[in-house]
Length: 411
View: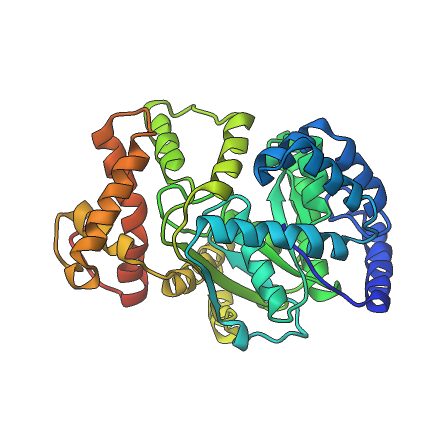
């Protein structure tokens, strides 16, 4: 859920330009909604019975209070006001009730007048990008549009809500014949917004969240981005201005749900999540305790690095090398908490990082572990193994890919 706050005239000009460009390039099926579409979309939302129940349950308000809120919403005439008055307070409420605070670093290295492609690790369905945008807006940065998978748009109200909050659609679970066309359109949209549009773009480094703690960029993502490249490899990726970024949670959002899913996939390679599973993960991610949260922007992918990668003759190897470069930047900027070091020592049966945490912190982590794993209806020993691995992997990746350590341990 993303927001911005443009002055009236500037916003009108921006909307006009975006409307013309999107219409010419036929992005209407995936782009965020504009201000001229907002009244109709809001009207749909306010009469949706499922959205009504979601408001009551998520805001913990009674029927009368919700009706008064919806009456006030009817008076809102722009996306910017809607975000300022309703979305931002909700995100701040979530932070206050389920975290120990959010910090962000690296903005000082970014140019407010530029548009960037933020490629991020992905831990929570909704909050990863929403938290980034709330914090960036407070620092005076322009809006960032957010990629969201169509598999999550399981109700019409979700589709409407995310698209009036700066989200664009990544189509998933479509026939193979349509996938190529859809991927090319998505690639064109992202490149168009970075090079000629008005907003930066956030996209996860992989399809779906990292459930085992291993934040790895899929070369397929970079292949999709390159589909709209009419220049050489170097020039095409240089103009995207890629900024790797890392979001780190002290307590894994939906940690027990992730462990449960991993276990089910081990037992049944053909296991498929249901729409209900995705919805429950979205709800849990918002309400579960997260501890401290940190967002770190890495350095833009260096032009010299891109030139060196471009010298590789094989296209697939270039994409793999670029993915590894993005990964290293994410691993370097991932904030490692005491829980990560504790889990590493427990997972590998070592005391390598014993000086990084206190006995009380270890006891607290174990208490958290046992309470969360009670919710996993699987073998507790296997669940513990997966839980510790999820927390230990970021430490392992930092050792191996940033420090270059050669270790006998294998995650």
